[in-house]
Every structure is written in structure tokens, then in C-alpha cells.
Amino acid sequence: MTGLLICAALGIEARAIRRGLPAHLDGTRVVVTGIGPRRAARTAADLGGREAVAGLGGREAAAGLGGREAVAVVGFGGAVDRSLRPGDVLVASEVRFEGRVHPCPSAPLLAGELARAGLPAKVGPLVTADHVVSGAERHRLAAAGAYAVDMETGPLAQAAEGRPLAAVRVIVDTPEAPLLSPATLARGVAARRTLSAVGPVLVRWAAATGPRTVLLAEPRSFCAGVERAIEIVELALERHGPPVYVRKQIVHNLHVVEDLGRRGAVFVDELDEVPAGAVTVFSAHGVSPKVREEAARRGLRVIDATCPLVSKVHAEARRFASEGRLVALIGHAGHEEAEGTLGESGESGVLVQTVNDVAALPADRPVSYLMQTTLAEDEAAEIAAAIRRRFPDSLGPKRNDICYATTNRQRAVRAIAEESDVVLVVGSVNSSNSLRLVEVAARHSPAHLVDDQGGIALDWLAGARTIGLSAGASAPPRLVDDIVAALRGLGEVTVEERVIAQETVRFSLPKEALS
Image (cartoon, rainbow, N blue to C red; front, top):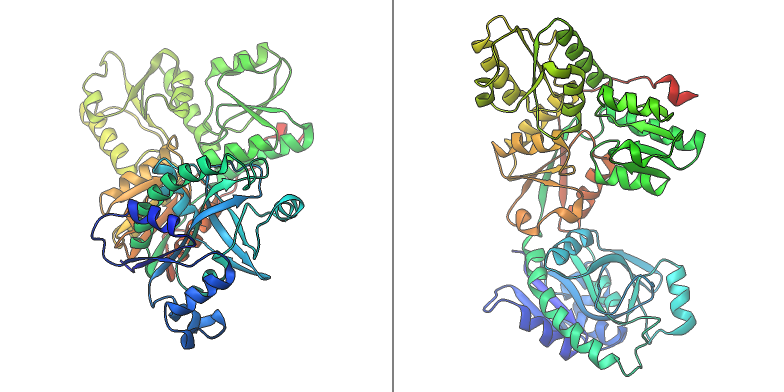
């Protein structure tokens, strides 16, 4: 553990923080700065000797805060953004003071941990002022993008430059609930309880600080099929205007779906939720013939975003079924791709999820097998081998059904996992290919699936000096960049890439998307 210095402006804040800290905790100091930037500046100087902190800037100021300790400035604050309510916890993404901006890159990590502790945490800019801010001044700060204001974080942020920094404010007053009102006392009591709960989270944050190496798997993030599907929805919105309806999620990623939703895409589970004649996109995972028939009956203007590699599996399913063969699909129950492929197989299709399922396959006709494109390569191969052992004359796909992107990402994550203390895979919980990456990595080191940086538990990072980082084929690349940036807020980060393959595949758009 690096050590932790917690600065609070008031004794009541410091006592609340101390109350929540574990007993006999080594490496943590709690100090009282006093209200206002000047007193905070004097405190910063006193912590290391006044002569060492000339001007409260640069290396001397950092030394004044006590050497290697991570610094957290904690206490009550006033909201300027109207989305904040009394009792909310603001984790500063940056501290604005005297014309300078002091970034707090690890804020999303800390906010995520606070949320898991049951606290209503939000991330946004914090302004330090030399007076109580009210009225029109609050509105001006809000218009400039600020979320909250205090009177002491700025000088301490200056002094802590180059060190892990966190600024946490429990909101006591808002534009609608001013500081000088009868309800302030009750809000202050509630805020004290919240501060007590903040302390243990700060200890976990400090334990996660320190220098580390990040190993980036390459390739990672979007594959050609995902890029194509997203582009199809974007083009539909541009050419036809919102709303554009999408059956199921266009790809299995929370951030992609939310972004397209903000731009006018409407995601539905079934076509009966779509108005007759509306522009409708089929997702990258494909659909069954019954869905296509329903769309035609209702006169929907369909744009098919099915990945071409999934369409290949559909074609194989139709061919095997037309030959009178049993079509054993190696895949996962409930996944949209599996449902679509089984639909193409008609009554000939059977889902096989494990080696044990092979024993239950009927032997009354010739057998063929196919694979869901997002499976773990080695597990799917094991099931396929079991099918061939039981049915020596069985036929499989002419080429491996598991797509190149899935295979490449699994091999890349395996390479980084062998060198890592922990592996983080960016992706959503309903993403099959992302889940398979976690399973592959977990055979070599602890591995976790996260939607974004806020999903990273700080305990995973404590003592982890080498972190492997990858992303599922449906995860936006920016989420990986966000995680690296957040980790830099915990200490120096060295980034190394492990390149397994270079992907140059591109898929053309369907003609319906261009008209």
C-alpha cells in the first residue's frame, strides 16, 4: 500500500471519516485543513515543512504533502449542477482552481467502488472558490460544466500534483436547497453518515495505487461484423431519420446500444412492437426464417445487419437440413445466433452445449454439426470431436464456423494472461465472445468482465503490477482507452502491446442500407 493522506476541512468531517476507517489501520493519516483555500494551503505546507513547499506547486509542494502518500480531499460540498441532490457523493473528475485544472483520472474507479458500497456516486468537475457560492454564480459555474463547489480542494490538489489524487464531496446544499436554510442541519447529519461509509472505500483506493504495466491484447474490440452492423444503424438514422427500430440489441454491448438509443434507435424484443411499415434493422446475430416472414407480413422496411459469417452458418444449416441430416449446433441456449441458426435448420436442428449432450443425439439419420461463431475454440473442438467419435460419418463445416475475430481475440488474451497478475476483459454480460475471453484468460490468471472502468473492483488491482487488458468484439475501443487513463490516476503506467494478428477484413454493406 502506498499510504493514504485524507484531508478534511472541518473537525466534524474528519471525525466522520475516522469513524468509518478500520481500527489500527497503518499508512493512513487524517488531517484537518480548516475552511478556505488559504488555510488549506497552510495545511499543505505544514505537512512537510513550509520551506519545502515554496508556492505550493511542483515537486516541492508534493513533498509537502508527505512523500509517497496518495491524497484524498474529502468533506461536504455544494452542488451547482441540478442533477445532484443532497446526500449524493460527487467524485471529482477534475479540480478547477485559480485558472488551472487538476485532473483526477481515477475518479471513475473510485465512483464505481462507492456505488458498489451503496452510495449514490457521480463523477464531474469540482470548483474551489474562496467564498460561499450562491445564486447567479452557481448558475454560471453550472453553465461552465461544473458539478459542485468547495473552498479547500484546489490548493491541496496543486500540492499533490504528480501523486494519486481523489476529491470526494458529499452534497449538503443545492440551488434548490440552499446552505442557509432550516433543513441544513438534517442534511448535515445524513452527510456525516455518508462520509463514514466513504472512508473504507478510500482505503481500498489507496491500496490499488502504485506503478504498473498494462499488457494490451491485439486484436481487441470491434470486429468487421460489429463495425458493419453499427454503420448500418447509423446510416439508417441518417437517411430515414429517427426512429429506426432494431430487433434485439444490434450487438451485445451496453454502451453501443445506449449511444444509438440516444441518437434515435429503438430496440425491441419482438416485431409486434414495431409500427407497420417502419424501418427495421435485424441485429448482427441473425434471425430465423419465421422472423423474416413476420416482417414481410407487416410490411416492414427491413435492413439486414446479420454478420456475413453468421449468414454462412445459416447457409450450411439449410444445406445440411435439405440433405435430410440431423443438424447438431454446438452453441449456447438462449443466444440469438443459436436461435436463428436452429430456425434455419427447421425440425432437423438440435442444440448441443456440452460433450454429455452428444450421447443424447438421435442416431436415426445422418448427422452433421455446426458451431456458434462466438464459442471458445478449444471447447467447441472438444464437442465436435465427441460428435465425430460417436458418428464417424458425420459432416462438419467446410471451414471453421468460429469466426476469425473470436479466434484471434482468444489467442491474444491467452498470450497476455500468461504474463499478467489479473486480466480485465471489456464487454457486456450478454456478449458470448466476451465471456469466452474471460474463460480463456481465467485458465492462466484471475480474470474479470467489466462494462467500463467503473466496473473494476479496486481489490482486483491491489498488488497487481501487471494487468492484462482486452475487449470483446462488440466493445468500443474507447472503453479500453478509458481504462488505461483511469489506471494512470493510480500511478505510473507502462503500456505494452502483444500483437497476435493484424485484422484487415472488411464487409460490404447490404444494398438496403444504401438506398
